[in-house]
Amino acid sequence: MSDNLLMLLEMMEEALGGDLQNSINKIVSLISKMAPEAKIIKQNKNRTEITNTGSRADRSEIITFLSKNISNKLDNYDIDFYSGTTSGGSSDIRVIIKDGEAIKYQIFLKQGNVGETMSSTLFELNLVNALNKDIVDYEPNPGAGTQFQNLADSVIESLKNKEVLDGNRFSKLKQDDAVLTKMYSEFGVKSREPKTDIISEDGTVRISVKKKGGQFISAQGNETAAVIKSVLDKNTKLADKLTSLIKDYFSYDKGYSTLKGNTPEEKNKIRTIRNFFLKRFTNFMGGDFTEKIAIEALTGNNKFEDKKSKPNYVLVWDESGNGTFYTMEDFIRKSLPNIKLGVRGRGGTRGLALRGQF
Image (cartoon, rainbow, N blue to C red; front, side, top):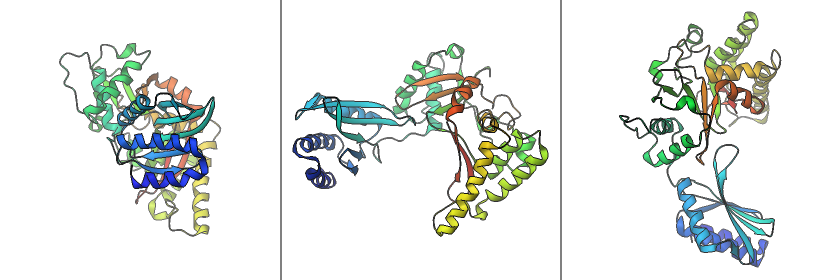
């Protein structure tokens, strides 16, 4: 067991009492055998969080190892092994120590810097592989890595109401295929990344891929201004005034993109500016303004000239291998009650950004 784990366990021993601490020590000792680089990042009387325990597959192996070596009983406590997904789509893997029905303690396994990390964008190619699994002459793409192909296969296999997918050949839609509208170009928008991630060969099925709990918009000043302009197109004077403010105050030079290094007074001013814009985005022109922003951000209806860049379906996946397939209309209707907008810095010299999470 590493010095870090041993020292922290000794510090907790007095607080928790003998039997419970003995159970925790035994479980942590077994974890350290499977994950030599593991270290405790948080520990109190209710829980221990251990990082550097590896990828989801690695942590699942640890849970299997623990269940074989501990079974469901240890030092008069009942032991449960949980492997699931948080509401945000991240993996949730832990050991639960119980006294009857009462939870006495929990040990959470975190990936940390050990194990494979995955690019969500490249993972879309793994999903393409899974969708084309029955296409005879299809050559699979490595995507985010062949180690993630089983996850992609599970996501596609779990989908319901996927009749439109059957028999189609799919590919990843490239940025080079997208054409910006004149309005977005005039606002200085450069990114031509399509809202469609995966497209059928005949172009009738255009899929936006979202990881559960992910963002649907993270737009800097120019693109935020273009989005607002597009949803206020019937009120040109108002749109021009608000978009002018966005382009000015969202710029990095204005100094509102970071709180770090500022005085308390300056931080309050920055928060006031951010809240000013957030209130306009959420409550401006009636209750449907947030909905209009979400629709534009998800579909790109006013951003792209070409039809293929505008998705008509959404595929939501999580790290447990679950997937849900929606029409765009159904996804927007289901997501609207949970949408959260925010105005925050993008880091570096990129200024403020409008962010939206579902």
